[in-house]
Amino acid sequence: MDSIRQYWNITKVEGPDNLNDGKYTWEDADDHCRKKLDADGLCGLSVYCPPASTAPDGGVREGVVWAPFSDGRKTAWVQLGDLDNKTQVCRTYREVNDGEDAPFGEKADQGADMKKGFYCCK
Image: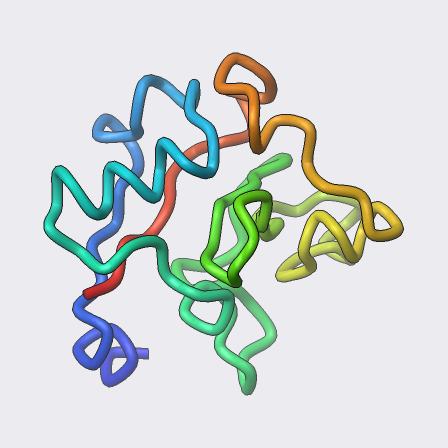
């Protein structure tokens, strides 16, 4: 993972630095990466969940944790928590919800307790 992190020049926005205590949209997170951190935007899914790994970067988080990622849509979110006994780890919201977009992806105040950070890539 260190080589991936060095290649993409990843900046984590989480913990006490979490944007607006989780009250952000996908677009807010992407804008934060671009404007505040001078990054290219949100990282892609493979940065959160490397293909050869069985767990997300940083390990499985406790509870329901959705993180926004870049894939060309403004509603792309990946599960990093132990939802459903870890069976949903590294699955996208659309995969888990039959192609539906995450309702909290476009409404900052929805799901703030499930949005605990994101990665920005250069």
